[in-house]
Length: 312
Image (cartoon, rainbow, N blue to C red; front, side):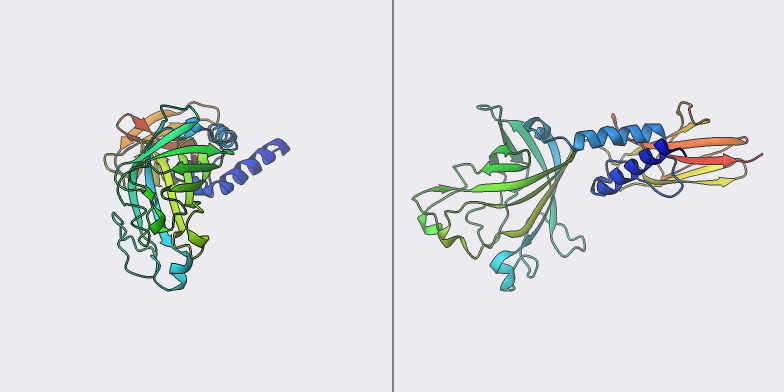
């Protein structure tokens, strides 16, 4: 490996390690992988996009939202926070975690009155959940009006009809509307992470905050398929067995591609529903493999690349 190849390999691994949180959408790296040009090109292009600032247009579309919440502030110190007690988090799934989580679908569109604002609509739940302030935050779908500040902060205003409260609830005036600030991290074109909490300072004294210590929403663009991960190859005389891991997905198939030379072109050699493929009847030579997941008309990005050598 020459000096340029070593530098490129280092940049490739550095980028992957720095973006391990986006593993569902990028090729995994494991010992024995081949750093092929197509994988490297994809990662470099992804890095260029990820380093760019988020824009309003990046947020538009339909997203699968995964929300995790753990109540903090003074409520947690008193021992009755969401993570410490049996608090009903509607729609949550008992997955063995010490915090509840739930799934939803979000639709984000441009506001009809301004190109710099968006309307955020959830299908099932209001993302600003809090059991203590439930009268302020009804756990029903509501549309939020949001603006993007500094490419990293999303400031949303609750609709006036059902997220308005008065002096009896700590509002300094006769009527206040709830604001929420979310720290936005754009991992890729298809992945966004939101950390949120209240920024409405009209609550009396603004102390003893019982809103979520963390309230995390991870957005994955709907229809984007995870990448087959940690592909491996095993040799047995004239046969190569290709295997990989993949999250449980219904009606997902996997297309296996192979090329016979480093500079060759990948060709499809099989379509399977299992997490392995046996490539039989091969003669001596070198073979490179890559796998894609397919669901309907949607196709994932390619897996990592492994090389198999059958000796004469």
